[in-house]
Length: 288
Image 1 (cartoon, one colour):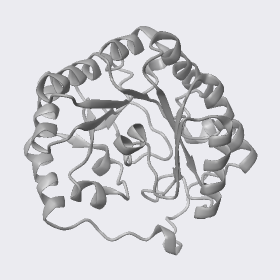
Image 2 (cartoon, helix red, strand yellow):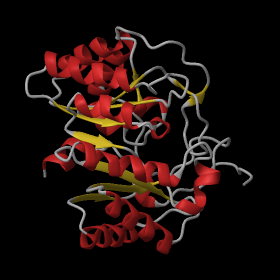
Image 3 (spheres, one colour):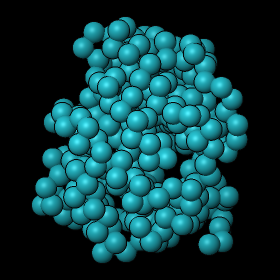
Image 4 (spheres, one colour):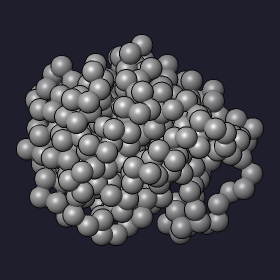
Protein backbone atom coordinates (compact mmCIF):
# COMPACT_ATOMS: atom_id res chain seq x y z
CA UNK A 1 0.00 0.00 0.00
CA UNK A 2 1.37 3.39 -0.94
CA UNK A 3 1.11 6.06 1.73
CA UNK A 4 -0.59 9.34 1.03
CA UNK A 5 -0.36 12.70 2.73
CA UNK A 6 -2.10 13.24 6.04
CA UNK A 7 -5.71 14.25 5.85
CA UNK A 8 -6.03 17.77 7.17
CA UNK A 9 -9.80 17.94 7.43
CA UNK A 10 -10.97 16.04 10.48
CA UNK A 11 -14.64 15.72 11.42
CA UNK A 12 -15.93 17.76 14.36
CA UNK A 13 -15.81 14.83 16.79
CA UNK A 14 -12.03 14.53 16.33
CA UNK A 15 -11.02 18.07 17.24
CA UNK A 16 -8.91 18.55 20.37
CA UNK A 17 -7.00 21.52 21.71
CA UNK A 18 -3.20 21.49 21.76
CA UNK A 19 -1.36 20.52 24.99
CA UNK A 20 -0.82 23.40 27.40
CA UNK A 21 -1.45 24.47 30.97
CA UNK A 22 0.38 24.23 34.32
CA UNK A 23 -0.47 20.61 35.17
CA UNK A 24 0.51 19.47 31.67
CA UNK A 25 3.86 21.26 32.03
CA UNK A 26 4.45 19.77 35.49
CA UNK A 27 4.02 16.23 34.23
CA UNK A 28 6.09 16.87 31.11
CA UNK A 29 8.91 18.36 33.22
CA UNK A 30 8.77 15.45 35.66
CA UNK A 31 9.06 12.93 32.85
CA UNK A 32 11.89 14.83 31.16
CA UNK A 33 13.86 15.36 34.39
CA UNK A 34 13.53 11.66 35.22
CA UNK A 35 14.94 10.70 31.81
CA UNK A 36 11.76 8.76 31.11
CA UNK A 37 9.58 8.16 28.07
CA UNK A 38 5.82 7.98 27.69
CA UNK A 39 3.87 6.42 24.88
CA UNK A 40 1.69 9.54 25.08
CA UNK A 41 4.53 11.63 23.65
CA UNK A 42 6.32 9.07 21.46
CA UNK A 43 3.12 7.96 19.71
CA UNK A 44 1.64 11.49 19.52
CA UNK A 45 -1.48 10.41 21.38
CA UNK A 46 -4.38 12.88 20.94
CA UNK A 47 -5.24 12.51 24.65
CA UNK A 48 -1.93 13.94 25.88
CA UNK A 49 -3.41 17.18 27.15
CA UNK A 50 -6.24 15.53 29.05
CA UNK A 51 -4.06 12.84 30.60
CA UNK A 52 -1.09 15.04 31.51
CA UNK A 53 -3.42 17.70 32.87
CA UNK A 54 -5.03 15.10 35.15
CA UNK A 55 -1.56 13.88 36.15
CA UNK A 56 -1.65 10.51 34.41
CA UNK A 57 0.66 8.97 31.84
CA UNK A 58 1.54 5.64 30.26
CA UNK A 59 5.20 4.90 30.91
CA UNK A 60 7.25 3.56 28.00
CA UNK A 61 10.17 1.38 29.10
CA UNK A 62 13.12 -0.24 27.32
CA UNK A 63 14.06 2.89 25.40
CA UNK A 64 12.35 5.00 22.77
CA UNK A 65 13.32 3.03 19.64
CA UNK A 66 11.68 -0.15 18.40
CA UNK A 67 13.00 -3.23 16.61
CA UNK A 68 9.85 -3.42 14.47
CA UNK A 69 8.39 -0.95 11.99
CA UNK A 70 4.59 -1.08 12.06
CA UNK A 71 2.72 1.01 9.51
CA UNK A 72 0.65 2.87 12.09
CA UNK A 73 3.15 3.59 14.86
CA UNK A 74 5.13 6.79 15.37
CA UNK A 75 7.83 5.22 17.56
CA UNK A 76 11.16 5.19 15.71
CA UNK A 77 12.78 2.06 14.32
CA UNK A 78 16.31 1.63 15.62
CA UNK A 79 18.73 0.22 18.15
CA UNK A 80 17.59 1.17 21.64
CA UNK A 81 20.76 -0.18 23.22
CA UNK A 82 20.97 -2.28 26.39
CA UNK A 83 18.18 -1.86 28.98
CA UNK A 84 18.82 0.76 31.64
CA UNK A 85 18.91 -1.07 35.00
CA UNK A 86 17.78 2.06 36.85
CA UNK A 87 14.71 2.63 34.67
CA UNK A 88 12.22 0.59 36.77
CA UNK A 89 13.01 2.60 39.90
CA UNK A 90 12.81 5.91 38.00
CA UNK A 91 9.36 4.94 36.73
CA UNK A 92 8.27 4.09 40.27
CA UNK A 93 9.62 7.37 41.67
CA UNK A 94 7.84 9.37 38.97
CA UNK A 95 4.57 7.52 39.59
CA UNK A 96 4.92 8.21 43.30
CA UNK A 97 5.48 11.92 42.70
CA UNK A 98 2.42 11.98 40.43
CA UNK A 99 0.44 10.31 43.26
CA UNK A 100 -0.74 7.58 40.93
CA UNK A 101 -2.67 4.59 42.20
CA UNK A 102 -3.19 2.98 38.80
CA UNK A 103 -0.12 2.85 36.57
CA UNK A 104 0.11 1.69 32.96
CA UNK A 105 3.48 0.46 31.71
CA UNK A 106 4.23 -0.42 28.10
CA UNK A 107 7.37 -0.78 26.00
CA UNK A 108 8.82 -0.69 22.56
CA UNK A 109 9.21 -4.14 20.99
CA UNK A 110 12.66 -5.55 21.77
CA UNK A 111 13.21 -8.59 19.57
CA UNK A 112 16.95 -8.12 20.20
CA UNK A 113 16.64 -9.18 23.86
CA UNK A 114 16.53 -12.87 24.81
CA UNK A 115 13.39 -12.40 26.91
CA UNK A 116 11.92 -9.62 24.77
CA UNK A 117 12.16 -7.26 27.75
CA UNK A 118 9.95 -9.37 30.05
CA UNK A 119 12.41 -9.08 32.92
CA UNK A 120 12.28 -5.29 32.80
CA UNK A 121 8.49 -5.39 32.89
CA UNK A 122 8.68 -7.61 35.98
CA UNK A 123 11.23 -5.36 37.70
CA UNK A 124 9.12 -2.26 36.94
CA UNK A 125 6.02 -3.90 38.41
CA UNK A 126 8.05 -4.88 41.48
CA UNK A 127 9.46 -1.37 41.98
CA UNK A 128 6.01 0.20 41.65
CA UNK A 129 4.45 -2.18 44.17
CA UNK A 130 7.33 -1.70 46.60
CA UNK A 131 7.25 2.09 46.44
CA UNK A 132 3.49 2.78 46.24
CA UNK A 133 1.18 0.98 48.69
CA UNK A 134 -1.96 -0.47 47.07
CA UNK A 135 -0.84 0.49 43.57
CA UNK A 136 -2.51 -1.31 40.67
CA UNK A 137 -0.42 -1.95 37.57
CA UNK A 138 -1.55 -2.61 34.01
CA UNK A 139 1.06 -3.74 31.51
CA UNK A 140 0.70 -3.42 27.74
CA UNK A 141 3.17 -5.94 26.35
CA UNK A 142 4.54 -6.89 22.91
CA UNK A 143 4.05 -10.44 21.66
CA UNK A 144 7.47 -11.68 22.90
CA UNK A 145 7.62 -13.62 19.61
CA UNK A 146 5.20 -16.11 21.16
CA UNK A 147 7.59 -17.07 23.98
CA UNK A 148 5.40 -18.21 26.88
CA UNK A 149 8.36 -18.31 29.26
CA UNK A 150 8.73 -14.54 28.76
CA UNK A 151 5.01 -14.07 29.35
CA UNK A 152 5.31 -16.12 32.55
CA UNK A 153 7.99 -13.74 33.88
CA UNK A 154 5.57 -10.81 33.55
CA UNK A 155 2.58 -12.66 34.96
CA UNK A 156 4.54 -13.88 37.99
CA UNK A 157 5.25 -10.23 38.90
CA UNK A 158 1.51 -9.84 39.54
CA UNK A 159 0.10 -7.08 37.32
CA UNK A 160 -3.60 -6.40 37.80
CA UNK A 161 -4.23 -6.39 34.02
CA UNK A 162 -2.28 -7.94 31.12
CA UNK A 163 -2.89 -6.04 27.89
CA UNK A 164 -1.74 -7.03 24.42
CA UNK A 165 -3.26 -5.22 21.46
CA UNK A 166 -4.43 -7.14 18.42
CA UNK A 167 -4.51 -3.71 16.68
CA UNK A 168 -6.27 -4.66 13.44
CA UNK A 169 -8.15 -7.37 11.55
CA UNK A 170 -6.47 -10.48 10.17
CA UNK A 171 -6.51 -9.44 6.51
CA UNK A 172 -4.62 -6.21 7.20
CA UNK A 173 -1.79 -7.70 9.26
CA UNK A 174 0.69 -7.95 6.34
CA UNK A 175 0.32 -4.20 5.78
CA UNK A 176 -0.31 -2.84 9.27
CA UNK A 177 1.85 -5.24 11.34
CA UNK A 178 4.15 -7.05 8.85
CA UNK A 179 6.49 -8.38 11.56
CA UNK A 180 3.68 -9.61 13.81
CA UNK A 181 1.22 -12.47 13.47
CA UNK A 182 -2.54 -12.39 14.09
CA UNK A 183 -2.77 -15.91 15.49
CA UNK A 184 0.36 -15.48 17.61
CA UNK A 185 -1.24 -12.50 19.35
CA UNK A 186 -4.44 -14.45 19.96
CA UNK A 187 -2.40 -17.36 21.34
CA UNK A 188 -0.60 -15.02 23.75
CA UNK A 189 -3.93 -13.70 25.03
CA UNK A 190 -5.20 -17.25 25.45
CA UNK A 191 -2.05 -18.15 27.40
CA UNK A 192 -2.80 -15.43 29.96
CA UNK A 193 -6.02 -17.14 31.01
CA UNK A 194 -4.39 -20.56 31.06
CA UNK A 195 -1.33 -19.47 33.07
CA UNK A 196 -2.86 -16.83 35.38
CA UNK A 197 -6.67 -17.07 35.44
CA UNK A 198 -6.97 -14.31 38.05
CA UNK A 199 -5.32 -11.71 35.79
CA UNK A 200 -7.75 -10.39 33.15
CA UNK A 201 -6.57 -10.22 29.56
CA UNK A 202 -7.20 -6.98 27.69
CA UNK A 203 -6.78 -6.03 24.03
CA UNK A 204 -7.58 -3.27 21.56
CA UNK A 205 -8.37 -2.60 17.90
CA UNK A 206 -7.96 0.49 15.72
CA UNK A 207 -10.63 1.56 13.24
CA UNK A 208 -10.04 3.40 9.97
CA UNK A 209 -7.34 1.30 8.31
CA UNK A 210 -9.57 -0.23 5.63
CA UNK A 211 -11.29 -2.94 7.64
CA UNK A 212 -14.93 -3.92 7.09
CA UNK A 213 -17.55 -4.14 9.81
CA UNK A 214 -17.72 -7.93 9.38
CA UNK A 215 -13.95 -8.18 9.80
CA UNK A 216 -14.03 -6.11 12.98
CA UNK A 217 -16.81 -8.24 14.41
CA UNK A 218 -14.86 -11.40 13.57
CA UNK A 219 -11.76 -9.99 15.32
CA UNK A 220 -13.88 -9.17 18.36
CA UNK A 221 -15.20 -12.73 18.40
CA UNK A 222 -11.67 -14.12 17.99
CA UNK A 223 -10.51 -12.09 21.00
CA UNK A 224 -13.41 -13.28 23.12
CA UNK A 225 -12.80 -16.92 22.16
CA UNK A 226 -9.14 -16.45 23.15
CA UNK A 227 -10.19 -15.33 26.63
CA UNK A 228 -9.93 -11.55 26.32
CA UNK A 229 -12.46 -9.87 28.60
CA UNK A 230 -11.55 -6.16 28.47
CA UNK A 231 -11.70 -4.48 25.05
CA UNK A 232 -10.88 -1.04 23.66
CA UNK A 233 -11.87 0.24 20.21
CA UNK A 234 -10.59 3.57 18.85
CA UNK A 235 -9.94 5.62 15.72
CA UNK A 236 -6.59 5.33 13.95
CA UNK A 237 -4.99 8.72 13.26
CA UNK A 238 -2.09 9.00 10.81
CA UNK A 239 0.88 10.42 12.77
CA UNK A 240 2.87 11.52 9.69
CA UNK A 241 2.92 11.25 5.91
CA UNK A 242 5.28 8.26 6.27
CA UNK A 243 2.57 6.21 7.94
CA UNK A 244 -0.49 4.40 6.65
CA UNK A 245 -3.28 6.75 5.61
CA UNK A 246 -6.65 6.91 7.33
CA UNK A 247 -9.17 5.13 5.12
CA UNK A 248 -12.08 6.83 6.88
CA UNK A 249 -13.10 8.50 10.11
CA UNK A 250 -15.53 6.24 11.92
CA UNK A 251 -18.45 8.22 13.44
CA UNK A 252 -19.29 7.90 17.16
CA UNK A 253 -22.53 6.03 16.47
CA UNK A 254 -20.59 3.20 14.78
CA UNK A 255 -18.35 2.94 17.82
CA UNK A 256 -21.50 2.72 19.94
CA UNK A 257 -22.73 -0.13 17.76
CA UNK A 258 -19.43 -1.99 18.12
CA UNK A 259 -19.53 -1.52 21.89
CA UNK A 260 -23.01 -3.05 21.99
CA UNK A 261 -21.84 -5.95 19.81
CA UNK A 262 -18.87 -6.62 22.11
CA UNK A 263 -21.01 -6.42 25.23
CA UNK A 264 -23.53 -8.85 23.75
CA UNK A 265 -20.64 -11.15 22.85
CA UNK A 266 -19.80 -11.32 26.55
CA UNK A 267 -16.92 -8.93 27.25
CA UNK A 268 -16.85 -7.74 30.85
CA UNK A 269 -15.78 -4.20 29.98
CA UNK A 270 -15.70 -2.29 26.69
CA UNK A 271 -14.50 1.23 25.85
CA UNK A 272 -15.36 2.26 22.30
CA UNK A 273 -15.06 5.71 20.75
CA UNK A 274 -12.96 7.88 18.42
CA UNK A 275 -10.50 8.95 21.13
CA UNK A 276 -10.31 5.65 22.99
CA UNK A 277 -6.82 4.21 23.25
CA UNK A 278 -5.69 1.05 25.02
CA UNK A 279 -4.51 2.92 28.11
CA UNK A 280 -6.99 5.83 28.02
CA UNK A 281 -8.86 5.94 31.37
CA UNK A 282 -7.47 2.45 31.96
CA UNK A 283 -7.94 2.62 35.72
CA UNK A 284 -11.57 3.65 35.45
CA UNK A 285 -12.27 0.87 32.93
CA UNK A 286 -10.66 -1.77 35.15
CA UNK A 287 -12.46 -0.63 38.29
CA UNK A 288 -15.97 -0.14 36.87
